[in-house]
Image 1: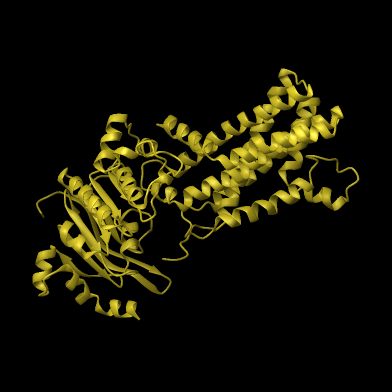
Image 2: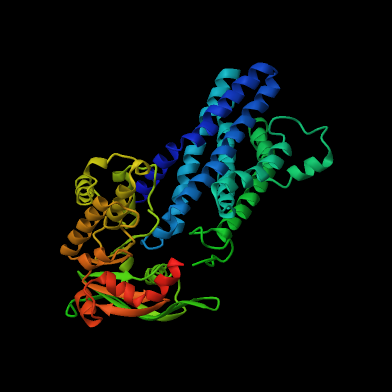
Length: 249
Length: 242
C-alpha cells in the first residue's frame, strides 16, 4: 500500500515539468555557462556546490510548495481525512518521494560538474556530502510546506518564496565570497539555513572533521521548520493559519 | 425502507459560527441501499451538515452514530471540489485512492469501475485533461474504489450538461442497485424526483420537510418536487432573485 502511494508521488513529481526545468536544466546551464567564463579550479568547485544547492532550493522549496498547494486546493487533504489513511502518513510519503528524487537530481548535477571540470571527491567525503544534502533537502522541503501554509493563492507562493530566497542567496556564500560584504549582510545570512548548508557541503568535501557544527546548525533549522510547518498546516484553504479554525462557511 | 439496516443516524446536530446558527437540530438516518437527497437553497446548511456527518467539521451539539466503528473504510466521498491528482491518469488515481483505503486494485477491477462510470476510454488519460463531466465521474469512481456501503456525493451533477447528468444518474442508480446507500445533495428537483427514495429539505439550517418525494408532494398538495421546493423555500427564492 505505502509502495503504491510512494510510487504515485514519484510519478506526480516527475510530471511537474516546471520544477524539473528549474531543478535540472537551469542549474546545469548555469554550471556550464559560469564554469566556462570563470576557469579557476577553486571557483569551479564553489560553483559546482552552489549549483547543486540552488537546484535543491528550487526543487524542495518551490517545487514542494506548488505541489502541496495544488493538492490542498483540489481538496485532496480534505478527502484524505475521510479515508483510513492519516494525513501525516501521506505527507511523509510526499516528503520521502521528493527527497529521493531531489537527491537523484543533486547526484546528476554533481556528476555533470565533476565530469565537466575534473573535480574528484573521495568516497568517504561523498557519503558525508550525501548526508548533508539529505538534511538540506528535508530542511527545504519543510520550508516548502511552510510557504504553502502561508500562501492563500499561487501568486503568494512566489511572493513568499522570494521573500526567503533573496536574503538567503545574497546573505550566503553560495556563488561568491562575502569577505568584503557589510556585516549586516553576513548577519542577515546567518538567520537562514542556506549559509550553514553551503559551508557544510564544502567542508564535507574538503575537511570532514569540521562538518559537525554545520550538521548541528542545519538539523536545528530542520527541526524548527518542521515544527512551523506542522503548526501552520492547513488541510483546507478555508482554514485559518493557526489552530485550523474555519474562516468562512 | 425502515426494516433495512440503519447505516448512519444523526441526532440534534447543530453548528454555530459566532452568533450565526448554520445548522439547527438536524436529525437524519440513512438506511442501507437507499438513495437519500439532501436539498435546500444555497447557504441552507447542506454542505456543513454533510461535512459534520463525515467528521470534517465538529458539531457544537448532537451526535452521529455509524453502523460500525471502522466506518471510514466503508464509506466513499465525492466532495464539491473534484479531489484527485491532476497529473495522474484515471487508472493511476484509482490505484492511489485504493491504497488510501488500504485495498489493492488490479487492472481488471479498475477498468470495470471506469467502465461503470463511463470512463472506459479514458483509463490512461491524465485527470487534468478530462472534461468537467468526466472529472465528476472520475470523482465518483474514486469514491467507490473500495466498494463502500455508503457513499456521499456533494452536488455530483452541478454545472454539467444534460447528457453528463444522465450518465451520472445511471451511475448512482447502478450503485444503489448493487446495495450501496447514496446520500447526495442537489439543486435539481427533476433529478431528486427521479433518483431519491427519500428527501431531507433544509432551509436556514433546519429541516423543513423530510420523507418520500411522492408522499411529500401529496402532503403539501403539489404535483412535483419543483413546486414543493418553491413552496417551502419561497422566502429564500425571493431573496435570491433580488
